Amino acid sequence: MKRILKPVTYILAAIYFLVDAVFMAVARPISGWLARHFEFKRLRAWIKSLPPYPSLALFSVPVIILEPIKPVAAYLVATGQFLSGVSAFVGCELLKLVLVERLFHLTRDKLMRIPAFAWVYGKFTEMKTWLQATEAWRAIRALSRAAKDYVVRLRTRLAGSFSRLVTSRD
Image 1: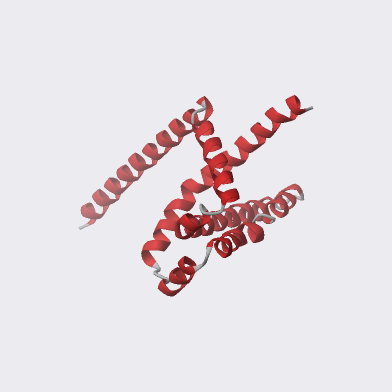
Image 2: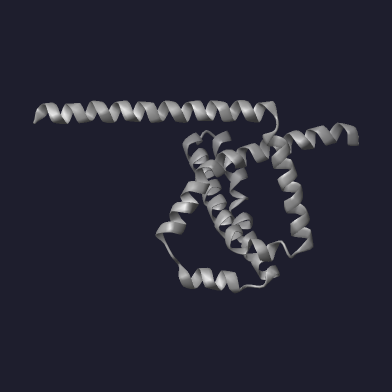
């Protein structure tokens, strides 16, 4: 039974990490933008002053609150409310990842002092490294870069067309 379940577990974990990685590609810029534009000095100082285990509790709050929305979103999609389900999933997943990323950035050193957290984070990092070494991951990254380059070229071309249109009217 273990031989059967082990590959299935790895495949499910890889899919979960792949979905999170895709959302992190969007969440990381949002998180950086928030950090640059909103100081929250007192809140940041309070979070940094927390000992390791309260930091872990705070770090867990967005996951505990927002993770259960995934089955609700799946239910909405399954009952024909596709737009509501997808919106709930995307919105809550992005919010969760932005909050988790910011909290991890602020509390990383303290969280790593907790042996169980450090061990789980090490396993997470190993899994992420393994996933990024796969051929499928490299193919997805290549497609992602190609799509991004296409959007940049299209935007540049449209901006040039718009600029010529505005100058021709003057």
